[in-house]
Image: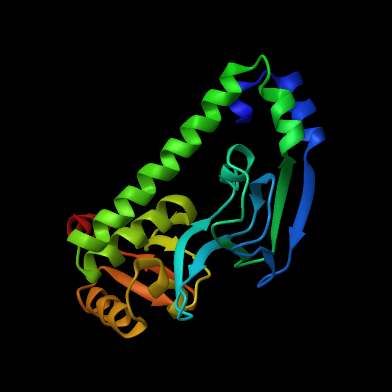
Length: 215
């Protein structure tokens, strides 16, 4: 969104946004809450999830610095469709509907950026649905690890260190499988020398093998 603005306009828009700080485990909003703000992650990690009628939780995505969410409520007012909470301590910027609409008037490039964000989110959801239908659990685990590595990974001599900060249960929710099944897939990857599992982190030792398994 900011990339579509010149420096002066981006600075002014930043000044119109409010800073929000969350402690690890703290919820920003819950599914069903009213909302009219979009948020941009400045620092930290958040998780976006939903809860079924029988109490089961599904983790839709993990959000990190630079990512935006909550924009649907600005264009289609209604209850929040998911719960967002902090995986780590996090800092966000919030922009209300009134401020955003003021900026959209006469700035089609900003509206285009928002549409691109929405299109990207829709593409991600379509891929997630297709994975649940066509891909097995090890394939979904491989794809999830690669996605986390792309956004949070840091290269080192021994591989790509991915501090995802997720519990085993949260990682299982992210790929839509039981914790036992996901742990079995991770153990298989370890035995093959593809990854090394650490506390709320993983080191990817063989990216190509993992990519091949994700297909």
